[in-house]
Image 1 (cartoon, rainbow, N blue to C red):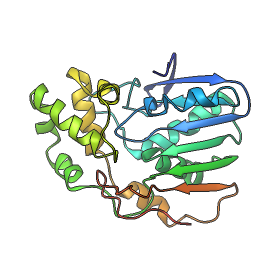
Image 2 (cartoon, rainbow, N blue to C red):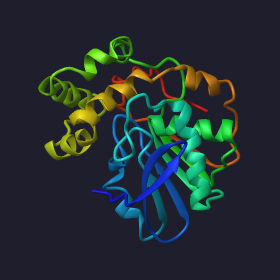
Image 3 (cartoon, one colour):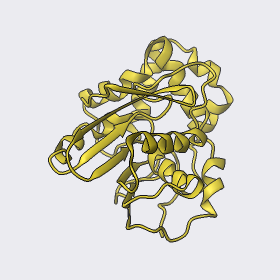
Length: 236
């Protein structure tokens, strides 16, 4: 498990983060429905060569979760910008997955962040995206938030599995589920789904042009995008 011992207050939200290693800076931005724990086996492999910064997006993982919270993509790029400033980073290398890819792109095109390089994989970047399940939760968030815990756990496990081609181990399911259970976590899980809105990628899609750093776009041969129904990979 990655340790996130630090807390920064950004736009009224407590954001948890950690760092390890020594060397040129590398920022890892997780996607949904996970947390920075998606990097738990990757970050330790990099710490001998890089100073790795990782964090939980607002409303995710160990970061603060509360009723009425804005956890949409609209806030995540501003949080990333604030963290860059706090960490004193100018042009770090960035690796970003899923919603983390959208966050990195929004921060670049809307907030003027600059990167030494950018690697995005399975990124939410182009319309259309948002599965029928996402649309259903958006219409009935309260009903899902209040369902019995055993029903929620079953749905959560099934949802997590749609993000992976191979079966997730029991350990992985437990790690990825942990933030999303209980009186705080369960409504937070449906809150972040209910706030998934394509307009936040529509806002920047028309701005995409050649970036002033090396860019690597990864999309797995067996990546179907089923849980988000993203439709197609982003190609420069």
